[in-house]
Length: 356
Ligand SMILES: [Zn+2]
Image 1: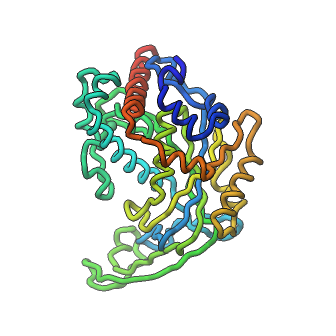
Image 2: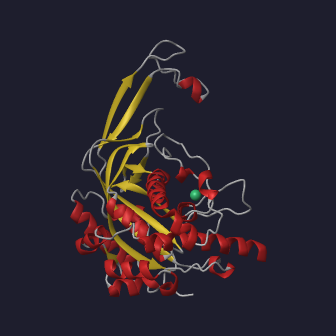
Image 3: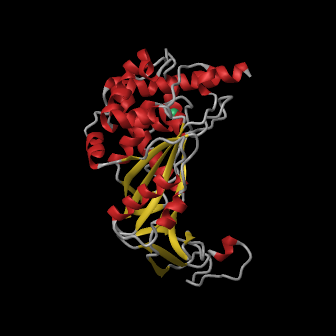
């Protein structure tokens, strides 16, 4: 079944947001899940999205221990680095909160039209059903293995015979300048009753009985370059990711990144493989302090590394961002397409396992 048949509304919106030509370009790297085993077999379809981040205040990347600050060497200097798993954790929580709103608004339609039949109690076992999911550090309450979040972001559960492989992956984000501030602080350790940090001891635990800590901040306005890769992504999934990225410009003040990082998607490209690396892009844009300059450099970088199999580089112009912000993502048809897609994905996986 074609993209148009399975996801008419998402396709229509993507076409409107990206423009007809850009959509036509990216279409062959979008994937259709019709519930068949065949549809979940891995094929080479990757959509790579580059983004620029800007520290909107002091960002703490590491808060305890010693000499384990996350720095990477770019152009011979150590620059602050945000591991992808931290960025993903933020995106995952946002997507969960959002999927939960969708379920609350349209559960009846989703049950009826998305193919979940009467089997709709599954959600109670999923972290997305828990209102406070993500409010506390590290709180995840198990996964249902059937909702759009689990299907895109990946999940495992002891209850199912399958694993959902995450199709939302990416690179660490690298700062373009080495703007680091280091502060030390102290507190009285409960065991030794002193602030002395014992650094000679063999185990990590002993070393931490002391109360000295160091904080490494990146200074406000520091720019970062990062990359997200979507593998075999369907139109409603791409639409949701773009919408979440364009809307949620601020990540942080939660989980292990503390502080505010504004995220600006820069460009997107489809190909048989991932295109380029955030590291190379950061090398190329190293030293840049202006957001607009960084954007231009990344676009140039992408134009240089793309292979002939790739789509054109689709820039997220202010026109595209503006249209994206105008999208009604809580449109009932869009919501049903997203959930039906997840249901079909799981059907395909189950079918695939049986067939093997
Ligand atoms: Zn779930």
